[in-house]
Image 1: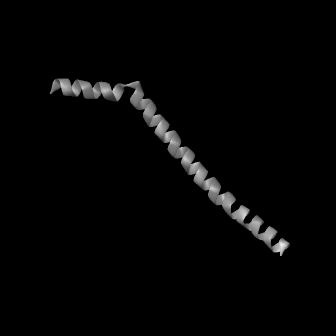
Image 2: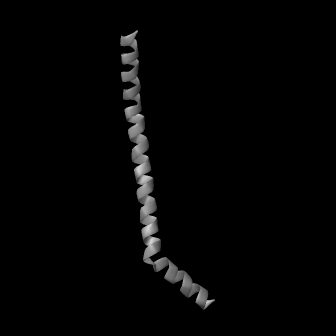
Image 3: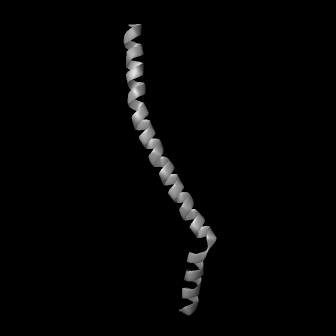
Length: 57
């Protein structure tokens, strides 16, 4: 049982585990920023294309 506890605590303290969590948090943050940007820019782009389409007809 002590060996299992030792392995578990050493796994938690590894640098790889911490860096993986940091990378995962960065990916989530980038995804959130990208979704917000697409939503904000999407409406403006849609309106611009609608104006261009109306001007061509």
